Length: 191
Image 1 (tube, rainbow, N blue to C red):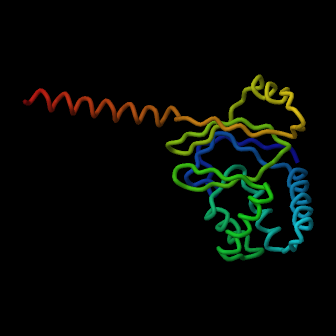
Image 2: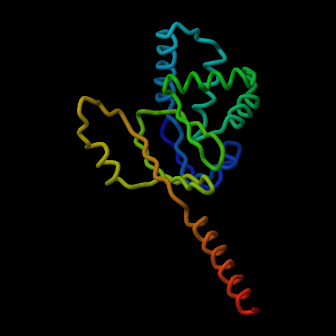
Image 3: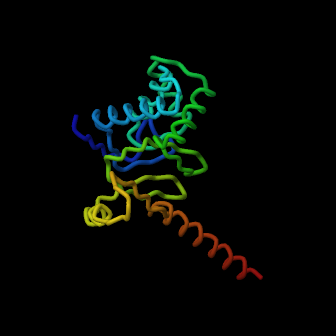
């Protein structure tokens, strides 16, 4: 299966608060490799390979980008294969964090999760005001990171997040500042 790219501002049914400009669908081979890693890590720790854990992981892999706890819960209920409790989902996500299969980010006041895919080299911008994610298509930057010579470390892939404020939020902030300046000027002129 090839990588599919979709271009729209909001991804319905996946990211209610997280606006995305470019979405990367995970390849089946990546999912399969990550699932094998999950099974190996569970066996190594002496933990059971339960249908619930596998279903949660597969549902998490189906998200093209970051997701919240509630979005994952809704996706699992919509699938209907295996229904899990909130406690099971929470504990399983915590386990996946410990196994370094997922990352967490706090954006727009919500905890977001993302499946770690070492095969991908990914650079993106994240707005700290609205949580908007935008993929950065800069091959020079990608090549620079790939060519890094790290001591006693083999690089399999990378994820780089560039935090800041998007142009939409910058414009909103500027408008609010200008309104406040006008209010202050009008207030001083009446004295």
